[in-house]
Length: 127
Image 1 (cartoon, rainbow, N blue to C red):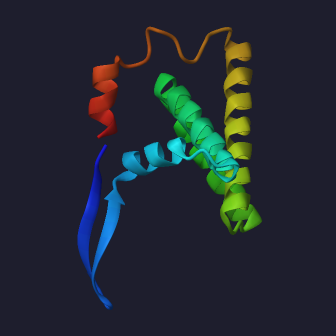
Image 2 (image 1 turned 90 degrees about the horizontal axis):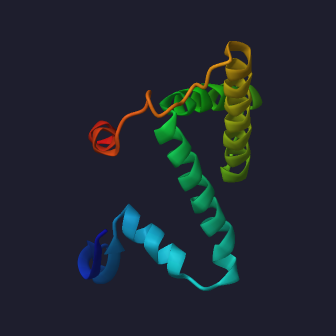
Image 3 (image 1 turned 180 degrees about the vertical axis):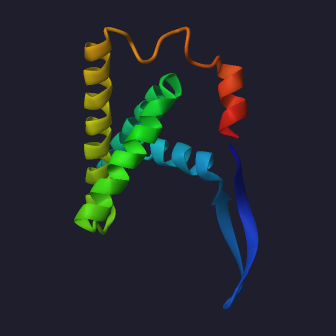
């Protein structure tokens, strides 16, 4: 995490002192905001984090979620954050349903302790 305070930036109006942060820093700042107005964004961050953990355990989920979500977004010609967020949720549910149906049909789990990468290997592949 990196937060630089203050950083001098040249703008059309002259040099401005600006507080800057990388993505992780921004998320940490958002988590620390006590305002009720920040709660929907905090819940969204938690949901996305949970989905990411699921995808680390079962990398196929990410691929399936992307394909199902892309098709929904293109079919509906979705525009705007709220609609795209709903498309992502719908795509995730479809992918989850497909995974459960396949596991039921084959009698085998898709994701097991034998078929996912250890954390150090995952970190290498995520970079």
